[in-house]
Image (cartoon, each protein chain N blue to C red):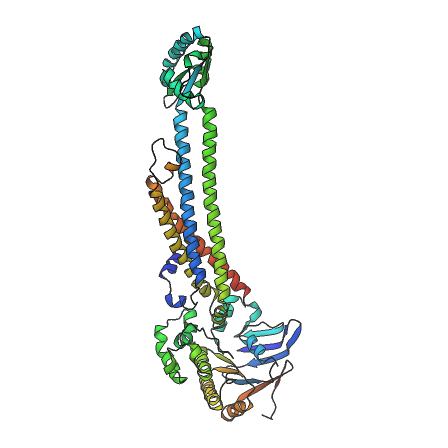
Length: 298
Length: 225
């Protein structure tokens, strides 16, 4: 396989001359490969960004939980003290903190506006719990809380985390599917272009067959031409896409998804696989098309 | 070398050739004659495997053509030089490149054959036309170039389809002389022509067998030639 690609690059330029220039079909191949590579790199970037986002959300929410205390007004402080006492003596809890009125106001602001008279509303008190790496035994903690503070409800965020992770993983799958779709379209386009070039050169093929050329020789001239065009086109498309991504606004630590669209660290190497895959795809698509057409000819 | 036995060829239900039996021994010279549309070109196409007989058998270089795959056919064609009626050049290549084409497509070392090619161009009188492209050549030059391409691989069998069809008498004689020289080198020659003068001229110089096709049937020509 590597030998075949090597011989494609070193090539026999004289042998290549046997087939006249295929003109616009070869140029279209390069253009389409460039466009497809550009889209592939973006799909890859989206896929990787979604993956990072899912991991971050998952890690951030997985290490925290919340205790909500709903009780008659006179018992709120007493139950909060009891909850804090339990939490601070529970292994797996790194810290626990009763959220202030201001913090609760900020949480409710998107729904009720900035001037909410919180003191007049029966709002439950919230305790933010930060877990250690191993985390507490949630079932055991729930039992202890229900015994000491009947109004306390422990929320480990799993019902928020699951749909977020599920959405992110679906987005990632769509990204991967898009890449596969783009590759299939590229293969189909190269096959059509190769078939068109082969049909346009039917007379040349007939002559070289009559003077003793094997199918391999004829196919090689077309395969070399289309593979090189696809690789060059895909390389240009990849570099353009990487440049566009590099100049996107940089992502803040807690930045939105769009500003986080990009490659990080060794992920910058991955786009260079696109021209390689495009080359392999063009090689096989042209080879299969060429042998198919040649077998149908005399 | 080449043996057809009771071969027939049909095209779209029409019988082009029937009950053809022919054997070409190494080093022999054959003319194939007959009126236009009698099946001369079809018979030649069977000989270089552009067509396969509808029935009967065909053995080339001892191999049954029906048992050959596409690579085998290519290898057999490398041992046969064909001068087509319309020459069949690649117009984007120079005459030198066209003549060297059989070497190129079979992966032969062309640099070691450059001297042979120059000799061949001298032999066919085309030294001045090496760098020209096919469309600018005259009919005679194209036919001689086609002969040069046919023999550059030093084939055992040379097949020519109306090689003098578009040539004046002087050029036709020159072409025939080249064919006779090839035969003297030991090549088997099969020429399809309807030019009786050419056949008579050849028979004065060599022992040529004349085959005639009539209504798709092959027979040995009589003494009227």
